[in-house]
Image 1 (tube, rainbow, N blue to C red):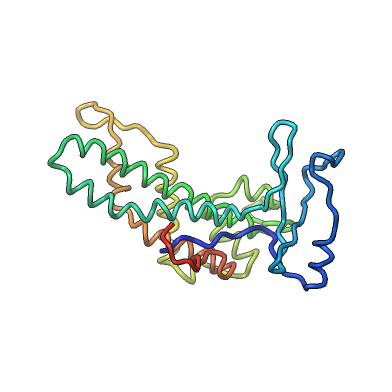
Image 2 (image 1 turned 90 degrees about the horizontal axis):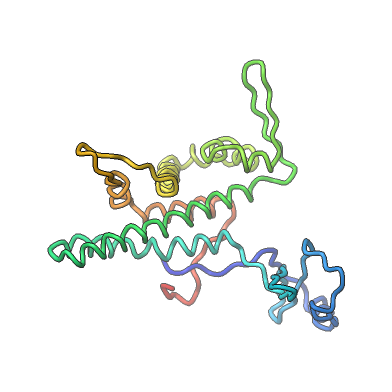
Length: 253
């Protein structure tokens, strides 16, 4: 998979006449704007008729205006870059086992690269799922003698990954991914489980009382990163068409 086309939030096109008016507007430097509200957005007109949402970056008393990147796409690209390296590192780890020095180095490099692939991919997936929940959405769950209603913020904070995929997102969008694409859902679920194991590693003492993470390393070694990467892309694009798409330059990075 080639590197992903950069996307920015709230990008839309306008007419040439409107763009001319925007480009003619005189905007004071951000440092001259008094009582600035950091919750406001600023728009920027570009020559190709696109308008982007902007955000303010603060460093000390200085403010800078930047186009706001789509962090879901950013996280996915971060995970993609490392996931693409895993197959070669796996081969290298096995091929160099006769050399103790190389093996020690390779064992570190392999697992750290796996983590750098898995964690941002799941973060991209979970961030995207939260985005798909409308601001005014309420999730109603009924249990014996109890009815619970949760708003968007409560859903984001309290409900599990599985609950969101199987119940919340289908209720919010009308699309039931885990039933339509069960094999791809299994890949996403396994990816999430691996992320959790990597993030909240449990220590285990083997038969001789020695500390070991052998099971986790073996799981990371056998995991199909390419399939999981494609499943995350497929899930996101299933709900927002072409949000994740390759850059037209065709380069790997």
